[in-house]
Length: 314
Ligand code: GLV
View 1: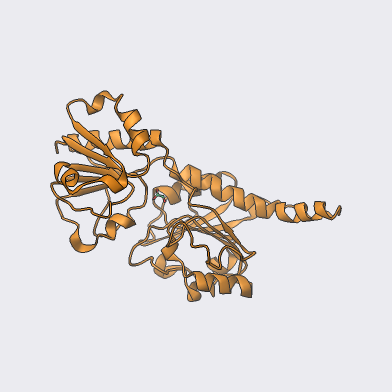
View 2 (view 1 turned 90 degrees about the vertical axis):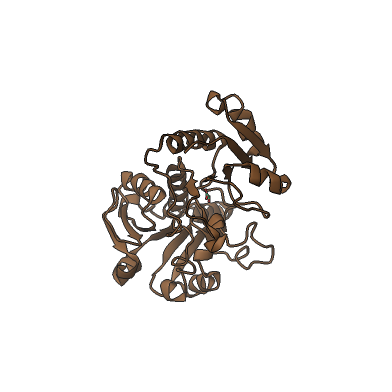
């Protein structure tokens, strides 16, 4: 496929312009860098490639042959609905997201195991009381999602001796997981024994509100970490599970509505830690590297490792 007119928009557009203007690879191609709210219908008709985190409000396919997501998640593209034309290729960014999510997760695991909050409180009271830290290699973790990010997360955790089990749509075995279960075959004892449950799943029809009352009823004092998408969780049920002791704590980086609304009860619940969608931020340099690699592969017709299966939604 030959790409000539490339439209970049959205967050990072200025940074991408700075980095890509110096790139020889773009020679011979026409490029437009347009801030989100300023993309016109003519820009969309002009482009044969669209590169952004998500579609603009006035998005239409026009003459597009290729859409490249600057993030790992493509749910906002998928939300365009059945309108996705068969002939338009969709790719997504694959970069150090798994490593970053590994570090994010480890930081909250260690905070729990090393009793950071408790020792801070003791210090405030001038209290000397030994409480033994717990070790990572005693931990059982269930990771939902065994794709690029889930596998890399499992690799990081397994390096520290954590026992990592995976859950995916197919249940196919994957590197770094002791075992992988399909969504239908997750056994209760595995969930009951889990110390941490980490969601990396994309948002699809199958995963929407997957973590609901029934699910939280099956866990026992686990910490739930969500780095996937907010709409996979029923937050009312999550709060109930925190209050009833089913969940010990929740660490949430993604929300259905972002920024999280000021009146959300999640903000003030003592068992909830909120971070503003920072567990795996795409840097401009990583965005450029993955974009250029994908452009080259798209043009050479070789197999793409970051092609989205539009039917599946990820
Ligand atoms: C972040 O959530 C992304 O989709 O990259």
